[in-house]
Amino acid sequence: MARASTQSGDKEQIGRFCLHVLLYSGTTAEIWLATDERNRPFALRRLKRDLRFNLHARRRFSRGCEVLSQLNESDHIVGYVEHGRDWVAMDYFEAENLQALTARRDPVLAENLAQILIDMATGLSHMHESGYLHLDFKPDNVLISRDGNVRLIDFDHSLPIPEKPVKSVKNSGAPGYLSPEQLQEGPVDARTDIFAYGVAAYELLTNNRPFPGETAEEILTAQNEPDGLVPLREYNPDTPAALEKVVLKCLERDPERRYPITGMLVRDLQNALYV
Image (cartoon, rainbow, N blue to C red; front, side, top):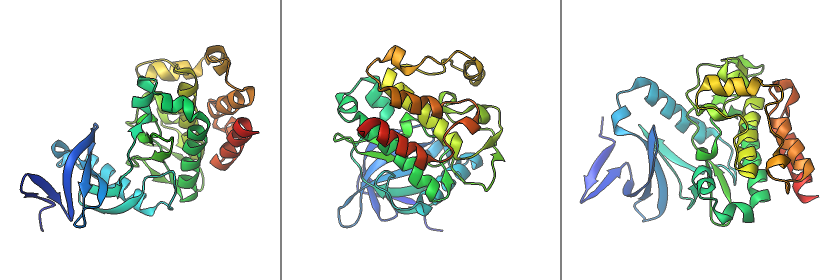
């Protein structure tokens, strides 16, 4: 079997792509600015070298590549190009993740708030329509360009949507964005992603976490507090009442009280923000 990567001068070559600049380094993978033989730019995500012999990490990474290759084309999901062993090439999208932008309160968020809120939900809706759950929706996995365009990334935790809710396996995602059913390893479906969306939207609108805590146990305790969730308008009085209602519906502890499908969430966001 041919090696996945070689050296071309002082540049590393993976398949037909030449790596140039490290754009991001996470727990599992790195993202590089790469070019092909025609010098066109791409984003290349590859499994970290120290995880090459970690069977669990490799399986999860490979699943993410396969899921991305199966998603319907969308303006709000990063574009798939091709993938190989331990890497995937994607359309290059000049952007930063929502977590970094929020941390420094970048003005791009306030200037494009309505568009970002709707486009994040629309990206999830496209993903669900393609037949997959994200199951790791969080600000790290939302890219936003300087003109406010949104792309969802990182599908390593994704699973096909079941006909009926199925019991989840232990999820190693960020606990603050996991639903009560994920934290308790209960059944998951599209409403699980809707809860995660609600957490991200709440933080974006208030600069506060809806369920404080550092561990999964602390966060689950906060989720179970009957009066623990502070209404958005107490933190941010400028939040439209209709928008607050939408976000709080996403954050219902009982999945039956959340939106049943993301299409309904997108519709209500549009009505709350543009009507």
